[in-house]
Image 1 (spheres, rainbow, N blue to C red):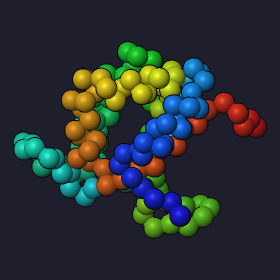
Image 2 (image 1 turned 180 degrees about the vertical axis):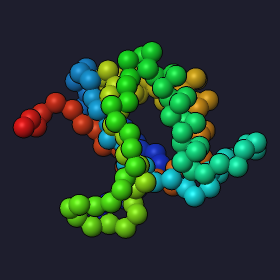
Image 3 (image 1 turned 90 degrees about the horizontal axis):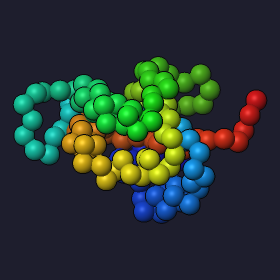
Length: 137
């Protein structure tokens, strides 16, 4: 069974840290947006979840691209060709981080925290899958 979530568990963070090799990693994001963004504190605009996530993505790029992160792909999740499901995800992104540590440091970065509010407001849930060297075709 697949289960969308908003935050990793402490066990997931520990395993993520333990897998670190110092090499670049790619993170596959499967995103499910709220119909209407929900901000904990007052926010001046009425936004859809996707619009709020677009604010987050712009802020993410501003904060993280100078640290070597790059968005390799982003687009709509249109439907299944293989397998089954019902509206689990609205969009997919593939982001490369220079290392696991850069991603872990991001969560404590003040500039990142300022834009993170848009992610929280935007998402109903997501899957975040770590990818890296190994399987080759």
